[in-house]
Structures are given as structure tokens and as C-alpha cells.
Image (cartoon, rainbow, N blue to C red; front, side, top):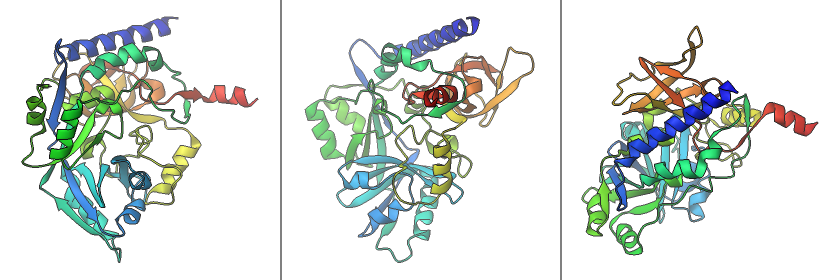
Length: 370
């Protein structure tokens, strides 16, 4: 009873913190956040064999784009199944624009060309295009109202049940004329393929300012909530620092929960280990949001995360990034939930993101089989 009460108190406190953080970002008249993502770069892949070429290198199924989807989340792995690059691939007519961390565009281009062999593909870094994000800060307020009962789940060792999707997650709606103007001015615009809460993803030439287009339509642009903090509060990692090159596995960083892995397509580089982990059904560590007791926290990358308040400190993970009072950590799920955590000199808590699929404990599964 004490443990349950403490857990519920912790969740209520975290949500109050989220509400206070976002309250300053949302005034009575509705606003959107618009940010140019200078930390993202683009590699263009074209040619008759572009689709089949990418299919053998990515975790997701490129046929989603051939069937009409505008964008798709995926990852490139090495032969050991470790993440090299996280990517959103955008398709415009017969061209694929592979978005990734700007620090990795040159190495991704080299990686792709290494597998080109005799394929009819052209691969080039594109410096004339930029990635933008348009998102709604009110999503953070609405999460509590819609998902309060979904956050509390069995904290024992768990097996993943197929994701049914997040019904409460709403696609960012834009005025029709605004949406048309953005589509005209930008190379492409689509819903973020990972989570509807993440808003719209756009690619535009360097001379296009998406924020100005929004303001021309009398839309109030909010610059008090950064895209990075927004992602962290939702528990979504991105880029080579948060998803270290060759040092993490796709399921550990929630690639499966973010619709970035197909377990039904053919072989691709790194597929064997990814499929094996998936079919065992147990992923003990995952990237999770950590809500810190303090503001403007400055904690080094890879700082160990400990459980405190129960005698000897127990290490449950390591820090992957921090922004203001919210962090991302690769944590052992069963140990980190419902307890007080310490990262460096700062305490905090973690919760399962609302968009994680429903899970069932091994004990429940065994009893069902019997």
C-alpha cells in the first residue's frame, strides 16, 4: 500500500511539474512552436534502384513510402545490430531525402556509397535544404487528462505485446490555407512518423522561413519551449549523442515503439540480432524521460543514474541528455519505476511514456496459457 501511494504521489507531482513548465508556453490564445532544426542534415538518394537499395539497409519497410506515405522513421544499423544513424526518410516524387544528425551526414553518405556496388543510385549530401518542426505545446497539458490511467503499469519483468497505437495522440491540425501555403513553399510536409504529438515535419530550402509563413497567417509562434525539451518531456531521443553511434540497440531506444522497425520485411544489415531480441520479448533497458528536481540542470553525458533512499545506491542506467529540468536516460525499466532517482547531484523520477504499448507480465502470460 505504501509503495502504491508513493508511486501515485510521484506521478501526480511529475504531471504538475509538466503543467507548470508548459503553462508559460501556452497563452489563452492558441500558439504553435516552430523551430528550424540546424542539428539535422539531409542525404538525397535517387535513381532507378533507390527503393530496393535502401530496403536492404534500414530497419523499416521502404514500401510504406512506395504506397503513399510521405515520411517514415527508421534506423541504419551495423552488422552487429547497433544503431549507426536514426533517420526520417521523406519521399518526394521519385527522390528519397534521408534526414539524420547533421554531424553524421558525411559518414552516412560514405556508408551508403559503400553498399552501392552496381546499383543505379546517386547519393549526395544536400546543403541547400533545412528541416523544420511545427508542434503544439498543449500536447503536454493534454497528456495528463487523456492518459492518466495508462501511465501506471506492471513494473515487473515484462514482455512486449503488439502495439495497438495511441488513440489519444492527436495529429497537429493546421488551417487549410496555411497548410496549402506551407506545402507550396516547402519541399515536403508530413506528420512526424514517430508520434503525432511531435507535430509536423517539413523540409524547405534555406531561403524559406516557416515561422514567418505561420506569422503571415496570424498564427502566434511560441519560442519559449524548445523542440529538444519538448522531445525530452515526451521521452523521444534523436541524434548521435542521445543514440550513440555503434553503442546502442534499436529496441533500447524505442525504435519499435516509434514505428521504426518492420519485423515482416526481408533481411537488412543488423536484422538478425534485432529480430532475436524482439522474439524473446524482453527488453530490460529502454530510453526513458527523467523529470528532475531543479531547473537548468547541467549534468555530463553518460552520468550514472542511481536509486537513492534504500541503503546502498543501486545503478539503474546512464544519462543520454538533459535540457532544463528534463533528461533522457537509458534505464532498467523494472528498477527505475516508482522510486527516487539520482543523476549526479540532482534527484528526479521517471515514468513510462504514454505512447508505450500495453505490456503484460510473464506471470500473467503463463497463467493465461495454463
